[in-house]
Length: 474
Image 1: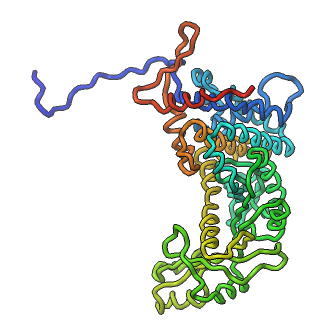
Image 2: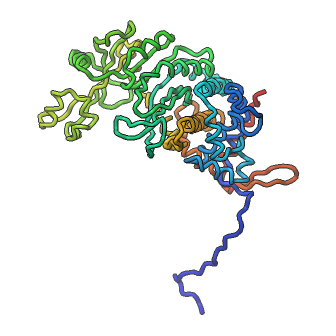
Image 3: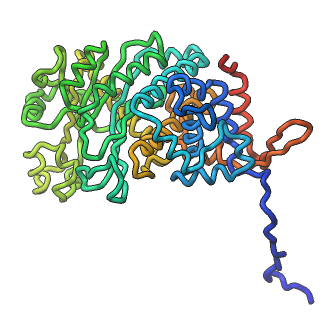
């Protein structure tokens, strides 16, 4: 019987065969392995942290942390993801270290105390220095000219009343609060703490800043004058004074209070100038400085034009708080078509001319770089979860995610994935999809290990060629 044109073609049934242990879904982990080996990351962590066990067997501190970070880079979302990584026989041959079982990982994490985590930060500084040494002169100059340290905190909501080190935040959520300091231009995390959700990060920000500056000094010796950025949550003279005493400059968001509103109202109209790269926004310098702050502190004001019809009727809306009360009332009644929304920045940077003021405001606006690092740690790694009821295990999980972010940044710098200015980095999610979690077959033949990839996969070979050109740490 002939088949009619357009009829359904029969398809042969596909059988499922036995599992092939030579196949892996994370062949690109080989690039992370090359990076770890070339930079001596495990040895750097082991040297600074020291032994975490009495007997020299099993995983060291560096191997445990690199294994945790590698698992999160490959998509592990919880501790049980470590067991899935261990089940990948072929992938284990391509990984930088052996992956700890989930139960062992929790046991090892409990051997770390605050001193050990501070040692991890010191190791990151040493590794950052090695990365810097392999960059070209132009990129080195860009990183060393005037480094920026960003400070911010984020919320990680958790569930379960028995989790320790967790508290209700201002939103009524049970959460932990990772508190980070990053080197903005390099895209790496320098220092971090894991706080309960109800802890004000300002209480420990001076200590966090000191550790971050120490790490930056180790990573970028001979750098220029450091600039520190923080949002309105860090509006405290203690932080500003600590920055100045450390020989740095600061720019911190200021509260909208009667004093700042009066300062904005006193700015003459001719003093406003257009901002850099922000449509409908203007910037001016106000004659205001908060009491008790370091000498030379000035107030920079940015105002942005908004259509009155776009203002939410919800009294809880954030934008309503940025508009003067008189303008807001007129806008809600329909008496004006446009209003100005104001933001205030206190700084000791040079803003004596309109051009300098606009440049400082533009630079401060990029403090969202740290939010990008946090987003990468949450959605690229697995910091959106705190998987254990023990705070020491959760701290280790946090550092696994942050180390994954740093490995991603170093991979971009040295693997030829960045465009050279620090702003061409792919998020870790995309890096996992395009480089790390690609299929491959590991073959042993003639005393050699060969990795066979699907047709069309070329990025891994290019990255490996760049990394293997780097001399390994002696």
